[in-house]
Length: 480
Image 1: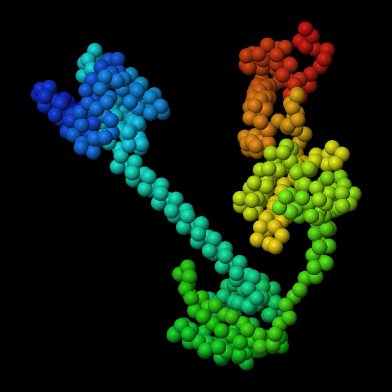
Image 2 (image 1 turned 30 degrees about the vertical axis):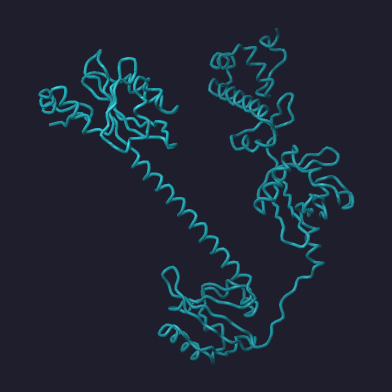
């Protein structure tokens, strides 16, 4: 036997409901709903009933005599229209959630369904309080946000520890306690061992030392596995690279047990040093533009690639001038870049343009960093030329390229006025619609004009404006 529709009572329930008088039916509705309303055929609330004491202070008593649609928030008004429109004898509408403004400042969420016992009679509204559900949803959202914050903190801590591990001047290895295989090595240990990372990772840690020290190293790892502690060892490295003091500590992480091995050379190791002059020479020869400015955005130094972008011959021509003189399509570009740099300390992948001294325009991607804690605060910038794209369509009367996607359109926010952005967006939509119509009609321009609701002359004018297709000036359709 098929189950009855969820919106209509079963025959047995209809027969039982027929035995109820008006008072009993009212008691039944009030007992099974958190809030019930009686609404006339004009949508005016004629009666309210609630057995919930926690509805006090929600302003429900002020709804009497008001249109039901006026008691809800703006986004809920279409749902009230649907509930009133769908109410009919013999059936019950589907549930819809609406929000009522509340004197407490927090909207009152109610889930409503309606029914109309008689065709011309009043509408009975049954409501269920959703505040508990809304509170659970808020707590869930807050918990998700807390988890995201905790994840960000853990990721930041992991990044700091990895950076500290890499920058530490003490040679350090991380070794699997069970297999003695090296899982991590820092640059200081690579310099001490004279081996690159790929020749150390995965190797038995005992192979890094002289073969005569194998028994002592085995005793070291065995003691760590049993007691968690082991005395330091002085053992020679392979290849005659000198003696080192080995200190080992046991730790657990991600379900595995590892050993942190520190290597202290008995003879001091001279650190490698990079000549300052060599570093400056590298910066000057970089194929990407490099600029350093002071806090007032005045250029302190710039390399040759930046001079090429700005069409200058010597660094003295740009030193002391503000970077804004050449950076950005409009003044807002540079302002946005420096604002993000001050707020976050670094900026990556910032798209803009560099204007040359003699009118050239080069699209670039800027990465920048601020050194606000130095004795002389300054900003460093690298400007990388972006690959050239297909020739853009220029709009008549504007200096901006027509955006080809939503992403390109949003990139213009802050660089051009909203009025110009809306105008260019309208032109983009027109161009895409014309191209689509021509593609669908296989370049039948008469059919395309009819599809777009344009005259043929109007279609040709727009095609000429956007540079679409081949327009022959001798075409009779183009002659007025």
